[in-house]
Image (cartoon, rainbow, N blue to C red; front, side):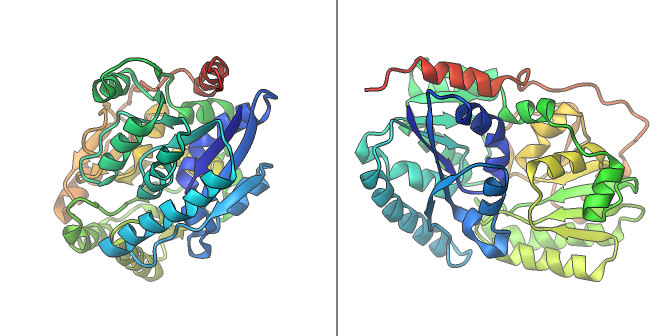
Length: 368
């Protein structure tokens, strides 16, 4: 089976890792990794180099970066992505495309393949994020796809409702749980030696992305978050940079300014999966609006302050606290955290064998 696996960012690549390894080690598959989006951007860490450093070959690179962060720039990038991927689909005869998630560039890459009749296997369908336009793209990819691998039973049922059929819809759990169970995460000393960051200090891991449905409020949201951080004492902040989204550059600039003015704030463009998950394990809490606060954080489990509406609609677990993007509300949520309170295990995303399940199912697929 000749597979085109689409990866557009550090985030989806980190999730893909156990599946990439399983496919790459199986002679049944011929794997072609197609890298695009922020993977190819020097300004976002040129994370395509991480794929190569991990021992994988990047077969095809596709230019898909927007020239700015306005709605027009994002839309133009989607058009460019579709045009550039049409050449890929014309020049290569793939048996299957594997696509993960809900990004606008992932949607465009998949949409460009529809006229070519290439089956798509979609990972992480059925989820809901009401504060982001990603919701539309995720469900659209599900409608384009032939095979579906969801992270939870509730999401499987949503895909079935969307498709009107249960055929080829499988709840395999989250690949991130495979990662967590397989990885030997760095301890505090190893982390400090490797990155100069001391996680024995009480640390808040912060990942905050723009809200792309009501994007006009993002400047206010950025100011409220940063105003809250200015008043929080006794914590070290590790701040990872936001996605390429509408108004993302503005948010990035404000975060970098805060980091430059505060010695207890550390900015990180891109952690690889091992480093990010190790940081999550040892941090005191997470703050922001990232999907990793729902899946990976529940594994440890880790206390999560989920900000705003971007992730609204995902399954909530007891380690999570929803909070408005408002200075006093954020301060209150941080101060109310009780480190002595035990958080029970809240993982609902499978037992850590999602990659093997996906491989087994794909090997049963008849290639025309």
